[in-house]
Image 1 (cartoon, rainbow, N blue to C red):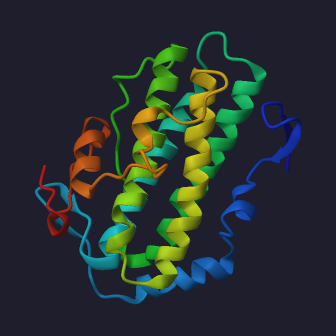
Image 2 (spheres, rainbow, N blue to C red):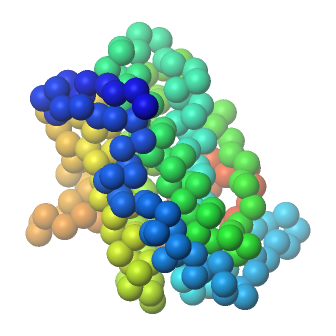
Length: 229
């Protein structure tokens, strides 16, 4: 495991794959969520459109779809570094990539046979050689991801799943803060993300999937949550 130095956090060591410590995504945690794979709600695919399902399975597949998108984006970003990227930025984006890949794989393992298939994405609208475009897209995905978890939390029936969602969204919020700081040094959250009470904004499942739909090559629906593309 390679250890990097995070300059923004005062030189604190940032070990790759440290998400395992941040989120507690241990084998035991996967086992808790693994109960989801025992459900009999099967993913439905009609005319190439993948439906996320209903209940907690649907919520987990919703999170799995978003984590697949984020992982695909950061894998592309790290593999195709933009012009002028610094060593520090490479470290940060690589750490985020590793977290998102772990999130993606975590949900896939937890969902088991109830998992939606591997999705395909269209990132052609993002010029990966352009720092401004890459960071703007990262901000969109991270901010939307945090709002997505906050917006779907009340729908989760299982206390175990809600606990895990809380652990993951806290990591996603750190990603969002870091990206905001890369765009505007000294900042960590945009005004449109927090309300007058200091609470993070939230979005419904339909709002999130509508916003993210341009990146999805595989069509997905969430009929149980009022989203039909």
